[in-house]
Image 1 (cartoon, helix red, strand yellow):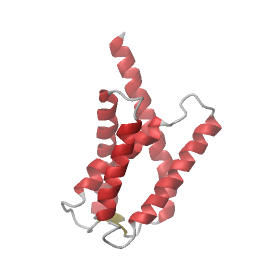
Image 2 (image 1 turned 120 degrees about the vertical axis):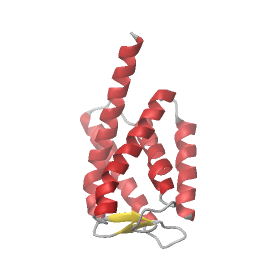
Image 3 (image 1 turned 90 degrees about the vertical axis):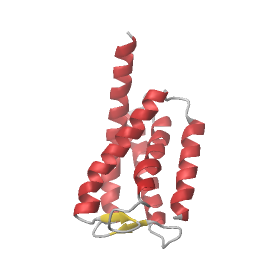
Length: 155
């Protein structure tokens, strides 16, 4: 639990202190999209098939923090520095770097309690390595869509 609490504090402080890009509306969209996407995925992989879990394989109150306030600030940080105007190679390298960083964090979260809180069932680290770039691309596309909607609402 110590690792989760420290992570939540660090990620949220960094995300909100470094934010110079997002409007309040965009922050709410990033958070809600992240929470919804994570819950949809975890309903199957975690709860139905027990691929991985937080704290225990069952639904528990401790896990609610991992589901609601851990990943959204990470996505904010990712989008804050994403090279929207960069070349495809720069974007790909950025996504790969973040995918590796998230995988390293996942490995740390696998440590025994009280530092770790994440557990593998049949899930393997390389599933995360393959899936995380797609998830980051989804976040980028969703953010672009929200910006387009905001722009249309203003004009």
